[in-house]
Length: 153
Image 1 (spheres, rainbow, N blue to C red):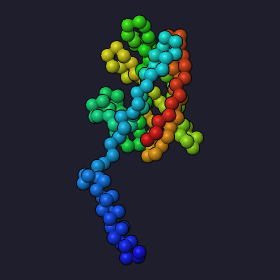
Image 2 (cartoon, rainbow, N blue to C red):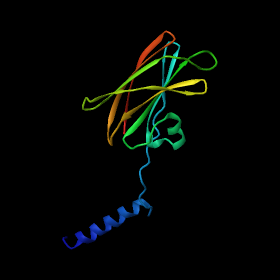
Image 3 (cartoon, one colour):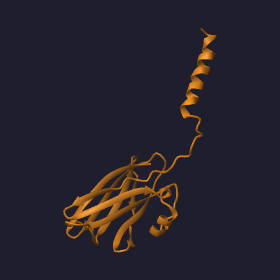
Image 4 (spheres, rainbow, N blue to C red):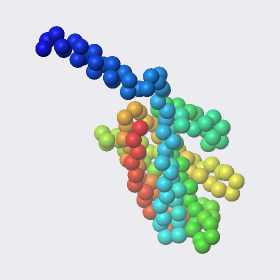
């Protein structure tokens, strides 16, 4: 039985090496984030959080952010809902991120104009295997509410 152990181990290792289909290991690619939306009365809020490394250079430049492995960009867009299409609306946005240890980050948001639309953007510090909980307060056109969501990195 002891003589068969090296042969068995060799067979297992060879079969495991075949699982890769002889492809070379690849570097991990950053996730693109998860765009979401929420409605508060006639106020529609679009929001997204994505690692800045997932942004191409021109998009990062248009938002005025520097791409780095330890930052993500929160983007919040306020729209007024109507029957045909959403219209831009001015409003206020504040945001806070909390990690699982309870450390809080107030996210400083600024406005970025894109044509007739205004986005509220802010950077948040992230690290590998981080899970952040977000609370985003929005108000515009007489409606307001709080978005709550989580993102992992």
